[in-house]
Image 1 (cartoon, one colour):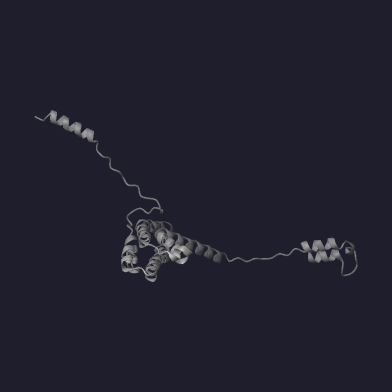
Image 2 (spheres, rainbow, N blue to C red; image 1 turned 90 degrees about the vertical axis):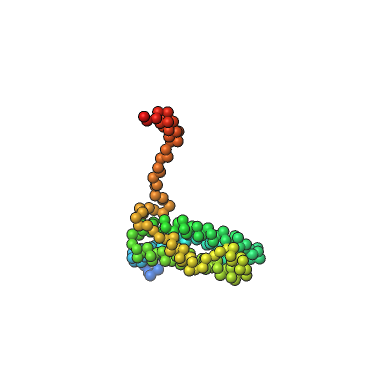
Length: 218
């Protein structure tokens, strides 16, 4: 329509011409607005958004459980700088990442699964969603093990790193994911309040003991 109006302005003398070059007639024919229909499959759109959300959750959960190893693999193995390529990574540095990842799994796996129970409330869906998280964590430990083998680390270095085998990681995840269903299910990051018992006042106990000693029972 914009082009038709521009053409009408460029041909002012042909507005009232009685032939096929009539500018007003061209404007009416070419400037008619057109309606375009767009069909959207709502189910496919919902599935696409759900898939993106699940992928984001899997990535976030993997970083929560194995964040130190993920950072090590991405920085030191996949995209190392020229200086890092020449300089060998100390086994003590790798050992810190491995131990921290194991600590995170032990501390955060059960609360993470409790949150999945709370918001999904479907064991089959929980299993489907947790399986790639588990595979990612085990896969990062495998990459560390392969890095040690391919980079020429000695047997003593591997003992310092103490990277568990894939089977050991699987067993460790299984033991850390044992959830007591008797406990209340809380969102991730929230801890159950524990009742604190009041400690007796030591001064009152001493005073009562002194009084009982000074006033013996006949």
